[in-house]
Length: 405
Ligand code: AMP
Ligand code: MG
Image (cartoon, rainbow, N blue to C red; front, side, top):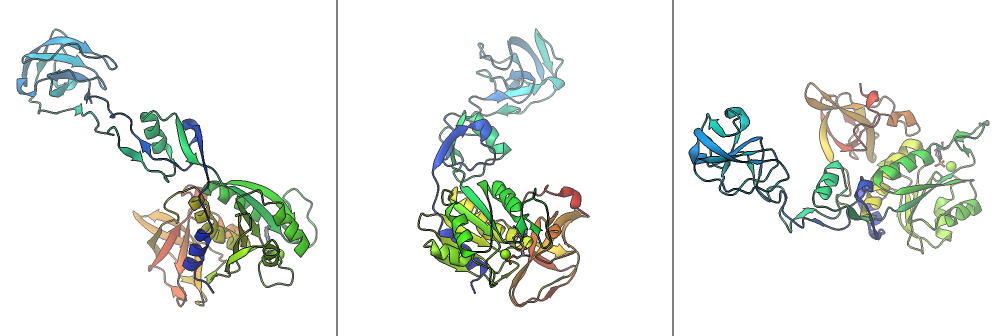
């Protein structure tokens, strides 16, 4: 069986970068920048004042100076500050020629004809230097960066009202199983509601893809082939269920029938062992994920999300793993690497990982509030409370916050 890392490598080999598009800055949140953002001018464009006060020559302080000009923000100073003079200046206004420091208004008498400066002011005090934030020609944000609020602000500062971002991959989602019925359908004996497609769509959206629900197919080879064929307009196809060794598991055969080049089949992990990843003749990458809701989500996080990021040229591709102290013991059969759901919380100023009560791969509620996957490597059957374990940080830390204990 492939290790998780080998499988991830093989998945990424199948993924080629998508094209780019130009969008308005205000729509760019969470998109991936596809071209370096370069400053076309210095920010700030000139030395400016960090305080309301007086622009002056530091050597003149303390002392009483003649006020020669008023410089509100947004105006251009007209007068040169000479020895014995000062200009009244507001925060953000350009520092006039000749001045080498700002005395904040609080250490003066606030005068408008003359001003008394009570304390010594060192050269450079409260002067924001030209280009201190960004210099013309600097790459201020590298391509491949996921755009967050700070990136939006910096892009606005350098006047990128439109930005070049990676196209969002289209991701088709297909549920399989005779027992699976959709959220709105009346339940019947033996039925299981399709939760996977909705959870997968949410995961896809968080990773940056555009999910498209493409229904539920029954457990026949023909229906599975038809369902997959109907999804070939997308960049990625993700199915859930039908990849185990059961007599009704047709996903692997169906992708083969479509001419797939299958690179991953079964991965040494729990949950999520039955995973099939293939490249279809049209270049689409098809992921057959397991049916159990937890296995399905974990497999998406480990294999599909990094593929989405690579398609968008994003770096890094994988969430960080950190060492966290366990709040309760964790167990694993030890035959392969096990991922266990935990919630990493702050307690007494330290991070601790609180394992979810149930760890069965069919217990969808065990994912509620989980923001980490603790990793127990093959051969490890137990980690005790108080010991450290590597934890893969997943998702938005605020998701399901009220589940925190
Ligand atoms: P399978 O691999 O098809 O045998 O599915 C394994 C388990 O996952 C079965 O209990 C299925 O009922 C369940 N399952 C499969 N697909 C879904 C789905 N879309 N939503 C919720 N549970 C599912
Ligand atoms: Mg099934």
